[in-house]
Amino acid sequence: MNYKYTLDKSSKKHKCPFCGKKTFVRYINVETNTYLNKDISRCDRESKCQYHKSPKGNQPLVNCNTHVVQQLPSSHNESVLGAYGRNYTNNNFISYLLKYFAPVDVKHAIKKYFIGTSNHWSGATIFWQVDEQMNICAGKVMLYDNITGKRVKKPYPHINWMHKVLQVKGFVLQQCLFGLHNLCDYDNSYTICIVESEKTAIIMSVLFPHCLWLATGSKANLKEKLLRPLKEYNIIVFPDKTEFDDWNKKVQVLEKDDFIISCSDFLEDKNLEEGGDLVDMFQKMESVRNI
Image (cartoon, rainbow, N blue to C red; front, side, top):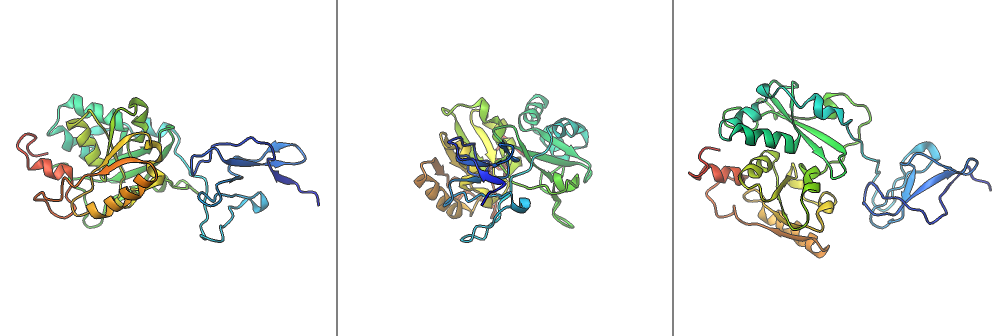
């Protein structure tokens, strides 16, 4: 039987966008001997990655064991950084920072973390997730109180994604660590500190700039796939209070996968409410006063 398409039978392989390994085999049009679209491919790491998108129907194949369908991630055009990187007088989070930090430090934080402004809600902030290859994976829109610096959760949690705000059809969200794009400025002699909140990562970067501060964006996002670009670095994770056991279990798994990583219990004995983080603790310290 003659087939119109076949997997590339040469030894040439490409970097898989899912697992990061050079195990991506592309499909070829037999008649023209040319590659099909780069997403129509198969990862050879069948037991771990399992990505396979067939030319037939141009649909991803379902792995029978896991029943997971994987699609190539989407990204925003780089123009969004400039388009939303302005109007900081109408950004509640920036107004909050300016109450406690010098304008030059706030300006540096804005530039370092690509902090944006959105009119989705008046005063809203955009936290762009840009990976180590400068792909703009996502933009999280959040609204903060400009006095307390707390998230606005009433009458509902004010959180959204820019691909939804912009109504981008077919956008496949695949997150990365917030602040990951800064990795190019830090060799593996530096320590990488990971917290949950984007707000906390930004403030800690001002207070302790000798480390690179990143954020997971949620407690569930401390996972191997997101931490993979940091594998050669010394990593310390700082879970929110009462989350130590959960994150420490994940850290122990990552250690077995050769990550140089530890989990700090620094907040566990501090007089904080459940879910309190490093910024909440430093609020209590006279040295940085009411941050």
